[in-house]
Amino acid sequence: MPCGAPCSRLPCNMRCQKLLECGHRCPGLCGEECPRRAFCIQCGSKGQEMVDLIEMKTLSEWDADKEPVIVLRCGHVFAPSTLDKHVGLHLFYMTSLASEAEHDPNGTQVEDEGMLTCVALKPRVHLTEGTVKAPASCPTCKVVIMGVKRYGRPQNYAMLRVLEQKQMIETDSKLALIMSVEAPDLARQQKELTQVLQDLLRHSPTKRVFEAAFGSEQCLVPTPNKTPLLRTLVCLCKVVAARLAAFNYEEKAKAARFFEKNRPVFDDALTVAAETNASLRATTVRLLLASALASVWTKSVGSSRESALYHEGRDMLDAVLKSTELSDADRAKATEVEKIFEAQLTQEELRQVVQAMGGGAHTASDASLHWYECPDGHPYFIGECGGAMEQSKCPECGKTVGGQNHALHSGNARADAFMHRVGLPGSAAHFE
Image (cartoon, rainbow, N blue to C red):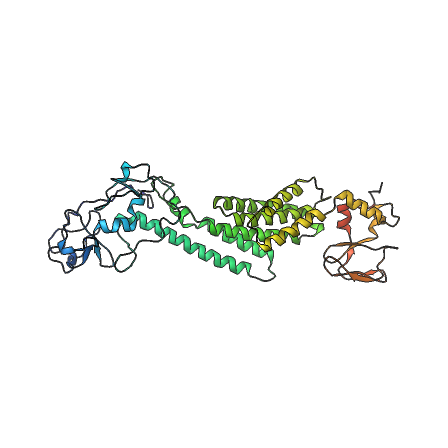
């Protein structure tokens, strides 16, 4: 059978038939490694070791024919009746009593006395979170139980949980390092987060085990912890939204393509949040998506409130504002995004503004002589002849606008992108 394929062998309750070095019969279980001579019931030096913690019987007093013993690597020896429930064997096998109670899929009904008799593998199910927390350890010295074939399934299952926790801690450290950079290169930041996401999907311990077992029904794999996946997706959503906000009006086509390419990040984040009942993170993702949609919508030609971008953005924002788990920071952000949707003028409204302030202009080329934009792309109007004769501050960003002697201040330029939004490209369009 290929390496990694699940084994259907059930734990055996029979005593081992082999002999120890001393010539006496092995006191251990069939299928397990035979212990050293010191654990011989007849002549061994470990006769005073406590085997049963309930009846308080020692190894020398124990009847191995009735119930063989298990010698752990740490050097302590116990009866299976002591260790079986401690390790959680009943969670992975149908026992002789539990098999008669099929209504109990979690195997909580187990034999009250004696070692468990495993009669069948349990079907592949997802154990509830917290059922198996960590690999079981020796009741005496607390060393993790290893090398006991009888407990291979529960111990390996618990070890997978440990590896999942380790991966989550490592992922959180990576995310904290990436997101803590001041004034980051957003493109590089997105690339690094994408790599973290790919590593999570490619190197998930539970996924690798399941694939190694060829998806067999005999392979009881724990439900993957999706917390690090969701955290990574949320960070990606933040960076994508920030990159969209950084596009200017002249890059509207580029912004639309970028959003279309990265839209699945938001969808995946919402899906994982729903699967994990992470309502607070789902609200955060919806707010980031609403912000992204607002950025794309304001840069689209006309910014019509009849567009799909506007309606989807408003729907997302309305869902956020209805949430009872909204933090103060998210509520402030939601208010900011709402102002974008409410304050943005439609193309027709912009045309009316341009026409009203045209100063007698009749063509788009005449009107464009009066409209300029600040270094951050905010449009402003200069009356009279349209030439810059004085300087002021942009009410939106505080940057210097205007100029002196018909020369614009550094960073200011003709508002060509704004005029295109108005729907008046060049002199082809005329006011009606």
